[in-house]
Image (cartoon, rainbow, N blue to C red; front, side):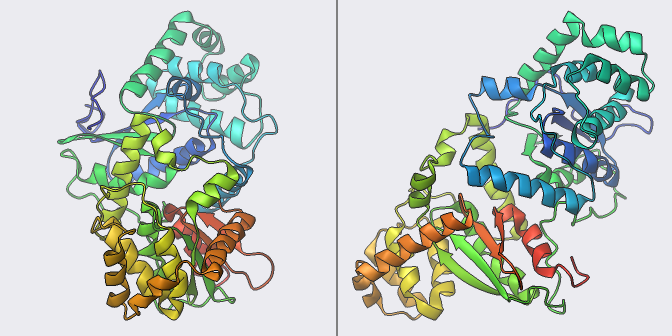
Amino acid sequence: MPIPLPAHNSAFGDRYQDGARPEVRFYFDIVCPYAYLASTQLPSWADNVGARIDHRPILLGGVLKSLASEPAAGPQSKQAMTRIDLGRWAEHFGVPLTFPAEHPRRTVEAMRLLTWAPRLSVPSLMAALYRAYWVEGRDVSSVEVLLDIAESVGLSRTEAQKGLLSATVSMELRRRTDEAIASGVFGVPTFVVETEGGPRLFFGQDRLHFVAEALRSHPLARSETPQVRQDAAATTPLGGPSAQVANQARKLTFVYDFSSPFAYLASTQVESLAADCGAEVEFFPILLGGLFRSIGTPLVPISTYPESKRRHSLDDMSRWAHHYGVSFHFPSRFPMNTVTALRLALLAGDKIAPLTHVLFRLYWVGDQDLGDVQVLERALGEVGLDPGLLLRVGEPAVKAKLLANTKQAEAWGCFGVPSFLVAQHHGQPELFFGQDRLGLVEKALRRGTGHS
């Protein structure tokens, strides 16, 4: 189902200084650290493709309340990983980030100030507010602090006070938030690029390369636009076979279940990434449903998403498949019981990697039933394994191994798949979650070699 067009469409550019240019709408709230990170990177991406940014301040709390969504909820392991992940992205982007002790702070007045501000002042005001919240630790719920910030970017203190206390401005902010929800926004940072085929919505600071691709193909894009940087989202630079070995422990553990589309996408990339970094992959199958039950996560998380987020997730899978140059087809049988397939992987010995790839491909490309004995026999034959292994999947030792793997993953701090552990020469391995963090996994593997 396509994302509905917003009430106002300035998509195909705006007569702005040097003429009509492509445009990206940037939905944000000062309270979100990922939106802060995005705000530090988006200008250079937009400049690179000759695009204009349409800043859209909205109330994140209003969006989440409207959609009955709680993205910050979840097991402690997920919350802990979020803090670590934010630190990694801040380091990667080279920007400061400090969580205030009182987070989350109220930002309604700050967002009203941005809604009131003259259009040309919004970028500098937004940057100053983000800096106050995420670098300086200032209380942006204080009117006096907000007026100081407004004054610091050249705005009238008196007029700013009138604006942020204005009932009209308050109503406009809520109208813009409602409009964003109607346009498919379910969180921040969100980016929308209008195309000839309709609006395209992207969520997350780690999707800026997709935003850039959409802008580059815009009818108003400059023909002389230089090649987009491919490193800013930390997703594609896989180095080369001549790169030095950074991971002296020479192991990258890939935690997966065949039931996950994102684990499938990761499986298509993880071995080449590891090889380029001088590491070896340990394939580590787990029972994702068992992990979810243990940590209190819904067994099919996507089924709990609001419709707009679910639609984006499905689009996102296809975008990543295209980005990686691999086939992908969401199966007609979902969710899939993968217990037997996972046990077969554990029985495959040194052929676990090729069997894993075949099983992933059968499900996520061929729409095959991984509970069908004939399908599994065909998979075993394709990698030269005896179909008789199917007779062993019920052995107590095999069952125990899959359960042990699942418990070990939980002990590592895993809360979903794909997860990756980068072994360290000294100390505990580093844990990463999500196929969209493969660039950060690579950076950890190369750390200390001059290639990170």
